[in-house]
Figure 1 (cartoon, rainbow, N blue to C red):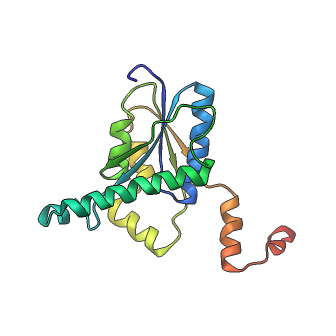
Figure 2: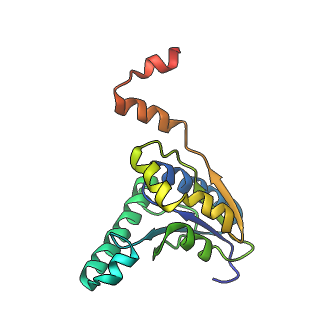
Length: 172
């Protein structure tokens, strides 16, 4: 697979990453490339905490959960694997930015990332502690990076979640 063009996309299962996954599939089709959806994971509490108290059965359970999350994301985005493009899903242990940039190591690769808004307190806190995955990828990737903004449909979904009448949005 070393000479095959690849479109690598970070997947977390969030709506923003599903938008990036769709865009990555379009790019892979257009480039006649292999689509490589990647879900990066770390042990709960982080690597340092796990090294202090290793538990192999728990580690397997976390990996299995990550594999299930990637499978669920592909199911939600495409109803399974996308049609018309070869797919090689990967689940890799490590911080997402580092995993994605180390994997996308060929000049012909394209790394697709979401630039989703993280307006929640939890999202802002995570970004403060870990840094932004999209910023890390833009700063460190040795290949081209396509940063996919959130879909405008996300605003509509947020409005529905908050109980706002969409007719108010349309008439405004």
